[in-house]
Length: 385
Length: 179
Image (cartoon, rainbow over all chains, first blue to last red; front, side, top):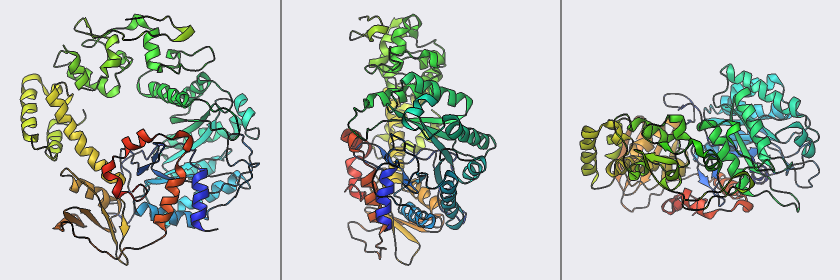
């Protein structure tokens, strides 16, 4: 099969894998006999009509897979054309696309052909060609396959910037519903543990990530957030990604807003000092779809608000809807030399006043009132302006 | 916030706003009267304007890193591309590409000039609207890229508003997959 056709098939098969654009320490080839660089802020080279960034050459090594996971387009029982890249072919394809500034790095995943060890070896071989033959020092994100052994994880960690493995489900019971052949602990958590050891040994520059398919196993948001929180704390996970399940048959897909609410909660845990106990879930264990989790927290914890902008501790500023980490840092820094007196000053420095005003006092004066009746359903008493 | 006032001024001076010196002067006055943080944290409208100028300059550099498409010149170690820069950022853009491809000469057409890197130096020549015909390698990789880009789209997630926000129209003509 021609490379063009392979790329068409194996590129399309990898599009449901979520990954960030590059991240990690700044590096460039200046003064070296190498090619490539990594910048601090991720570079998206294009955007598709769904608004998603195209940053990395996201491909599978092969779409042949011995597993039959219900959520996956490459499952064994799915009848469609199978193909695979040769390691040299893929390495050459990538380096030429990189030179043309089409892509910022390589994201390599794969179906499991023959065995995990066999496929992982071939993936590692591709990366070795890039690193040693083409002398490429840019960004590589390598996917670990379920059940990858410690020595292969170590080798992968030495060669790539980031490693990831898709958990897909938050716990063994849910996984059993959609991927009977996978053992949650042995096949998925264990490779993460190996990668964590590699990370702590300084082999991995950009950490470990994972991905959950939202809605495939009828799991709740609280289950997903519980597991991601555990991974952040116990396995040094850098980031969890959430991808709304797109059914392969006539099932109803979960609302995309659910994925968005999970990302908001994830950011609150990672950058805003929120704990799992701070989230308020509906009776079914899901987050409120109408209001974002930070707003729900603020409404449910009325006793903690409003906060005085000129005095509140940094941690409390971060809990106010409409105030992000950058705005909170600016407020904290500016008020050492200056006392805020007007709403417009906060607006200038990046506070979304429409959202923040009801929760703020400026010099003892209320910054604003609620402009609508808030009703969070059965869990929350509504209150008005 | 992590930038110092002098770094911010250096960035703002690259902006194409004809009033930039006036804005910088106002901001310096405010820094003297109300403190450095007042200005760097963008508390006043002038400080916000000043901060926005810095942001727009850095955004332009970032977009040049994102959206320039390079072509390889036949039998030469030259990579060349064309783009639009509205602020004085060419040295920052060139630095990115020369650091990434040190074995290649980088040639960027930013009309009315063409900029060429040689080692650490950058040469500039006026070309106006003239077409530059280089013996470009016509290879299959452009077609690969177009196919790959097309296949990354998930129709169930169509969001044209977000797409247009991320890729300003003024850059479309430089991006082979969009133009």
